[in-house]
Amino acid sequence: MSLGSWLQEQLFERRIVLVTGRLDDDAAARAAAALLTLDACGNRPIELHLDSPGGALGAAFVLVDTADTLRSELRVLCRGQVVGPAIAVVAVADHRIDEIAGGR
Image (cartoon, rainbow, N blue to C red; front, side):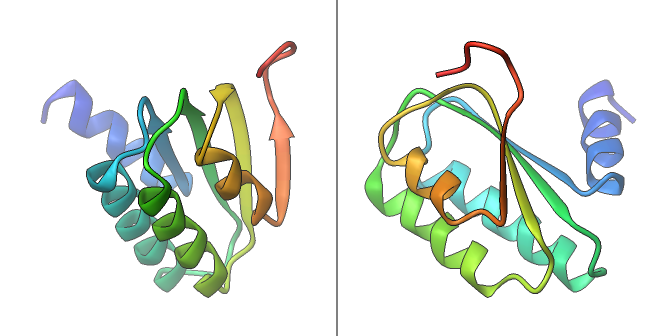
C-alpha cells in the first residue's frame, strides 16, 4: 500500500474529506462521492477540510447539493484560502471552523 492510499484510508476512517486546490468538476465529484459514502456508512459527523483559491460555480453547487442531502452533520474546516465559489460550500455547512488563525 502506498503512503497516499494509506493516508486516504486513515482520513476516511476518521470521516474526513479533503478538498485542496482549485474546486473543479473532478474535485467536486470525488468529494461528493466520499461524502455520500461516509453518510451511508454511519451518522457520526463528517469533516470537510477545505482549502480552495477559487473554482467553478457548477462544482461548488455539486457540493452544496450533496451537503443538503446528507443525514450526517457536516463540519467544514477552512484550512487556508476559501475564495470564490467555494464560499458557498462553507455557507451550507452545519458547523464552520476557521482552523488557521488569519485564514482567508
